[in-house]
Amino acid sequence: MKYLIIGLIAIVILVISVTLGAHNEQVVTFNFLIAKGDYALSTLLAILFGGGFILGWLVSGLFYLRLRLRLGRAERQIKRLQQAATPSPSSVSEPAPVALPQPTKE
Image 1 (cartoon, rainbow, N blue to C red):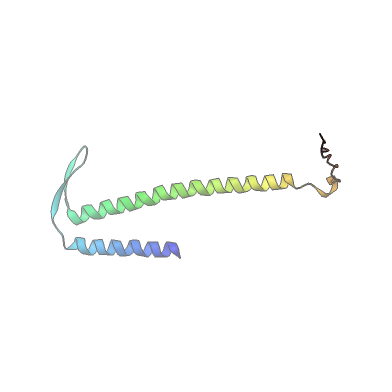
Image 2: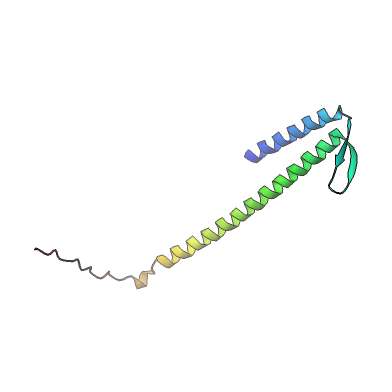
């Protein structure tokens, strides 16, 4: 449900930006590091917004994937440790008595 709401918010923002950008036909010069180009302001904003959105999802997805892999490894390790700590019924014996130190009187 949370992802649906986030997706709807992103679509609403995209629709609003396209609506506002359709009325803005101002041409701007955009200087790249190695090139220069003239673009409509609405087109440039839409491209940069879309690129940033996709880049953000990729970075977030990589972090999410890394955390899921860590969680899976940790769960497998916990399962192995629990199986190693649980003795089998045939090897259960009574524990040896523990000798407590006797108090000394001075």
